[in-house]
Length: 561
Image (cartoon, rainbow, N blue to C red; front, side, top):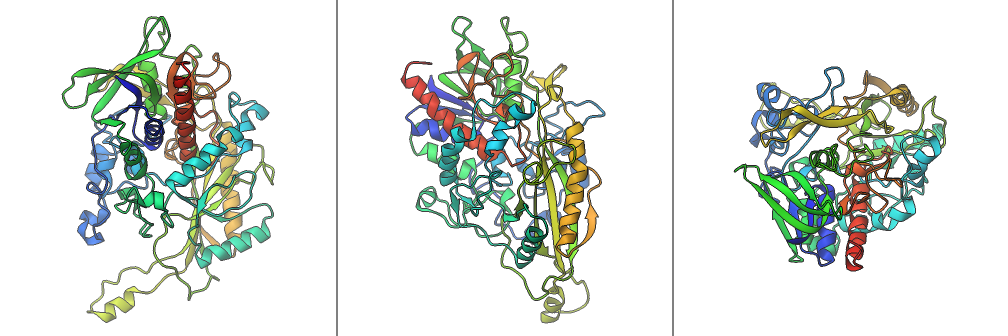
């Protein structure tokens, strides 16, 4: 018997565990994947020549084991152990509507490999559904979450600059990483030629300067290597293994169980309370049950929805907490992969920069803020960089200094910006249980049916046109543009499958991330997102986790649970 059980150890589960244990609760974290050790299991100390095949995975292995995961930018020989083998963890989609579900099953989950871009949603994001009628109204507003954004930012460490933009609220920042000289020129040109647009340094959860409370957890400042997805032995980037779980462990209140596949949640039909969680040992296939007073779902947007759907019982034949029929619906990702690349011939040839920053530039949303959208709602931002193209290795005959001199030729400045567009909630973008196919633990596979719809398709052409205009306006020559957006899922920001809302008839969780139909069940991962904004969502998941944990403990103390 535990005070609380947290299902999932990734970006939101780690914060849930930290906040609950620090408030005195005895907490069990259940992780479906294997245990990995911070530092010991990373490959961030290997030199390039120590990695096989120039850090590439053989094509035959990619086709056999990673046909979906291979499309993620961070999959390589050094990181492949952090990504699921699609051959061992299948799911289904309609043949004409693919979805790329990018996953990592191990302690810490995708927090080990995440991109670390950390942005707040804005007041307009929390109000958007109510204003334009899509989805349902958020049950909270920006002011409800603002102090918890600050709380999390201070703990994890977010480097960034204050910009005073209403569509992108400022936070509690460490000193920002520096722009390259090329980015400074790009910024000046874009902001001069396009009033209302801003180019800022990306806000990222890497320690530009470690603070004392970071150092207490063994974290140090970023070394500017930009191999963060391998795991960082310096602890410079926030992950569950570098900061949130160690913080929980030092309270003495944390227990972690790995290799435990959650089958379902058990509900008392008389009180509606969740009483226990049923798990299957991933290695022995034996079942066991854990009991608690509180339960936090942090298994990821799809994982949490799958648990709710598979927890059906006689009283809830279509799934636990699903009288609204909203569990599994309203899948959102971000419109992704819309990249424009340009050569900047007039940028200074005698300028370079030091190290490899863990971030780039960011262009916050301006469409339907300072500029109208061309027939579409909401908007998009851009992520990118302006960097020097490296010289190609010289395989000619030579030795020593002559080879070094030839290989030190640096190419021109290259700019690239990629659009991230908001995806509207739509009830027919959904996941269900595939009743005809089960995984090795006897749990029905997920069937994912989601696609970009009219508003997103209208947005695509404007993202590409604006990208081209900005690079050309900054003196560049466009040399490449994406022909179409990436497959849904490749943004790796899936969310919305058990949304928050005010009405139990149209939503699954309330404004405290508490299930309408089970008072002691909370969810704070991407499943509860009522809309997606166009910003990277992980900071919002963490802020909701901290806020919900605080409120859950207060409710428990007051006897409300």
